[in-house]
Image (tube, rainbow, N blue to C red):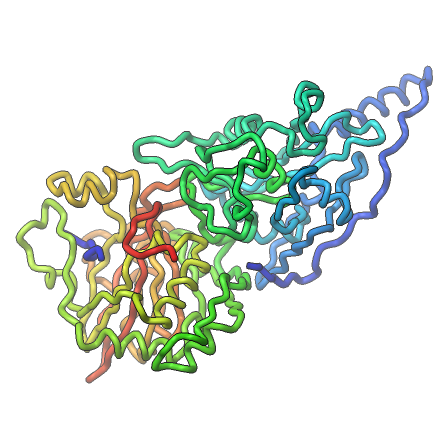
Length: 542
């Protein structure tokens, strides 16, 4: 059976207690020599822990918080361990920039327990990793050369035993005219350390290159990004707020390492694309959507929508499901925006088609799908263009990853049987066009952003039959709407569900369908954006 559709920041979270600040103390003086054997053993143990071999970062006490959490983003605040002095003032963080070029660096997110609670999961998430990075000062004989210290949280869970690793700039680098800050540390060394500790898989025929992000979802660097020697060779237009998510972004070694150090906490995705960390069912985070778009000079038939689009938008992302990963955002669209989309698409609505798998050639799409649909281009429409940008900001992926907007209308009893949005190469061996589109599996539909344009009183839910990793019942019919997570349509709400997991692999748990609309003359309007794992060119990245 074919179940494929036709193709066409700030985080502010609230905690129950907030993060506690550790008292900042200078490093202890070396102990005096003594003949006391017991004291010698005690000193040796203290030294062992001070080297960072077993000592957990100060962020290890991760608390479970049921509601919105607070992400403490600061350009000058760092939580300090007793055994080292870290950059803890604006002046110290400013020193991360090179002597010749003041770089625009991402906000610093210290690895406090409260901040980590926004990303540490109850169960492992293969392909999602958290790394805490401390920049150690090179004074008071603590470190003779610029040094970074790392703590790794593989698969986004707390390890039973913390092991911290250090990387120090070589003497040769400093003596040959290199900078005397962490930017002189070789990114290739950092990369090798991440690959080893996180067991990262290199880019392959069906594997996108892994990438590193700030906690707010801004891409810092990818596995195969081009690295140049100095910032002078790099365009000043590159800053952490620019979209730099395309493969082979050009950045200097110094900027990459300094951005990592400035961020403090970073997330590494094996699949190379940002996914909102679910943490646990019911978890919520508030996100500011960027960029802020201004349509005051555009002609539009919906002044209210344009006015809303120009204001700063803060939305709350709630985790509905971890397996598959499904998140919900209420009020993503305004009522006038929903009405505008439906009214613009209505004259072009036709009964929907599907992309047939090899085994389903010759069958009618109505075997599985009875809705109507139309595709809307955003060209010369400021409202749709604003929503495109807002969707890019929400997903943390450039607009060039989006397909053209698909608008859907379901009348009474109309539905769409359970299906996957990704294209499995083994199902399209006789379809060269599809195989070419997905580059034989290297690219695929990564996520679906699904918009509800009307509220439906009964029926019309989006259903996920394999919710919580449950197997399909014996004799399961793909039109069944009795098993799984059901999301009710609510005007203005959107959900995001991910067809690929954090490793970039197809997630069979993302099976989903549209339940029949119930009630005489009842109508469900909806729309969706398919987001791809790589740039596709369906829409311009303006």
